[in-house]
Length: 289
Image 1 (cartoon, helix red, strand yellow):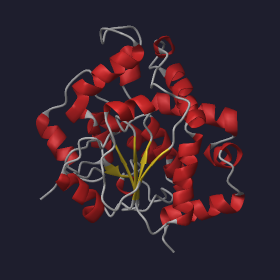
Image 2 (cartoon, helix red, strand yellow; image 1 turned 90 degrees about the horizontal axis):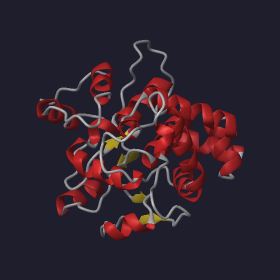
Image 3 (cartoon, one colour; image 1 turned 135 degrees about the vertical axis):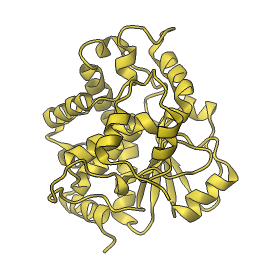
């Protein structure tokens, strides 16, 4: 029988430093239970509608419905069993690939029978970061800048996802980047917020990528080192950039508020959706009716 950890236990595990390995017994327990799902050949894959709320009170607001929106890391190594799991177990009907041109060259998208993959080229040719901005505190300045840049650069991609939610509420979908952490995490936070999830649930989903990426931690650390242009994990700011902290998500939200007036205004002002569109998107995120 699968045992599900409490939201508090999940958060404590997710706050483990990224340069430190997690214990195998902990990892097996978490990755075998919701919100994570097992799909052979990928990692950091979970059902956004099954992220537990850390709040003890009953009034936690709405939440994104289960078995509709999935987030993941790269799908390049999907096995035949994994492809079948996406289609038959999860019911995924469309995949959105948020990776850059070069990332797709290094890891080509798989062929998924009956599941179209949507990819829109952006101005970001390489996923690079400004490491000095992560040196202070827990890296709040760096995360704020990086994630606001994601909102700007990936506007066409995010619009395509929200169009799918608006027009095809009966078709579950999955979105991913390479780690399924940053670009994927920003989009997941946007969807959670539109669905009316409480802030603590959104933060927990953000933090859980620390656990979901553990099976490929060494590979992703090497990927991050290349992106940051450093030779050691001890480089100033690097560990802040690799760790996920609630303070960094809050710093990003402050930036969204200052720049756009909040996520909903980002959807109307930056993505061009009408208020009626937003109402439909919000309704479809929580119900098929």
